Amino acid sequence: MKQIIIIGGGAAGFFCASNLDEKKYRITILEQNSDVLQKVKISGGGRCNVTHACFDPRELVQFYPRGNKELLSVFTKFQPGDTMEWFDQRNVPLKIENDNRVFPESNSSQTIINTFLNEIRNKKAEIKTKCSVKEIEKQGEQYLVKTSLGDFQADYIVYTTGSSPKSLKIIENLGHKIVDLVPSLFTFNIKDQLLQDIPGTSFENAEISIPKLKTEESGPLLITHWGLSGPAVLKISAWEAISLAQSKYHFEIEVNFISRSVDDAEEIFQSFRQAHPKKTIGQSKIFDITNRFWQKILEVSKVDLNKQISNISGKEIQNILENLCRKKLQVTGKSTFKDEFVTAGGIDLKEINFKNMSSKILPNFYIAGEVLNIDAVTGGFNFQACWSEGWLISQDLNNLEI
Image 1 (cartoon, rainbow, N blue to C red):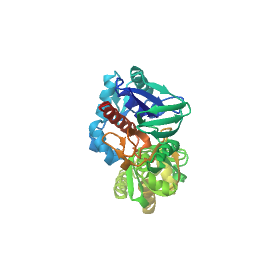
Image 2 (cartoon, rainbow, N blue to C red):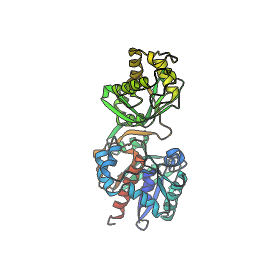
Image 3 (cartoon, rainbow, N blue to C red):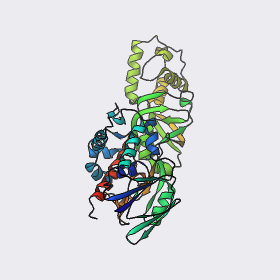
Image 4 (cartoon, helix red, strand yellow):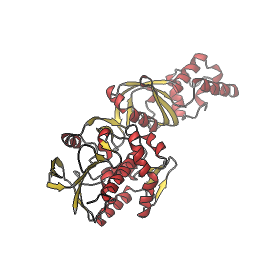
């Protein structure tokens, strides 16, 4: 029997192992932490956002700032529908939420972890935790994996370590080119009077742009203690991860809190003013925003809350609309989004054969997961890439003539 060593006990490594033919291979998983599947455990606030209900590969790749071209062929072979069917066959019911994110019906990531551990047990695969890989040496047809728990011989290696600098160094020493790591999916640190004292204020659909980079995103937005977060911010941080790292996270953004043009907003304001001339501006519910935020807008626009709306001057209206629809804010840093740390960068994609996720440089060596220069926006997409890549590797290994 041939020996497969899977280095990294995360999503991609476990999905690959779960689909391997145990009659053909001895399978050993090496994990440097004391627990396997740690990211699966904390994903989706402990519920595990398994995948995203997007079943057209061409649409699906639009959620990947890096790797979208390469993943198209991968997703035509295994996509979210296949993931859902895979769990269904193992009696794990999944549910699609309103925003198309997919979770186990149990609302517990432990359900997903137990499913994998069960599959691995059935395949008599061995899991070695607290096993830190120091070096990999090519020895003829085989590989010698040197670890903190001794040396392992491997006929095939599946490298699914995640994006730790140490694991990238190991594979760089074997001849692979590494694209520098930068954070992706982060929130913006902003100190501005408009955002002060109102954390937790959210907007269902805001628009955010970075004028210098000529880029914009829309979606839900959230004011936090340190600045701005929410899907709109996370999306723009992922797409512009490299440019924003180069700017050392100091840049200007423009926010439209109500997703309406200044002209549209002015029309809404004027028609409200005609209908309710005697109302005070502070008590007027003109736009779909919270009272706290409206009063903050008026404060920043230097408008007296007790003024009747009919007495608001043209200049005051313009100030209000500028702050609502075209507010410029200075970003002075970033904060990691929860514990679900995602990086851009990793192994150069030109060196991977995406038909089977094999290395073009190292024979009998497969690579998947976040160690590659592939990343996605939040919503189950990073896991889907892991499942699809892990599945391709297992199918290729299962079909080898040994």
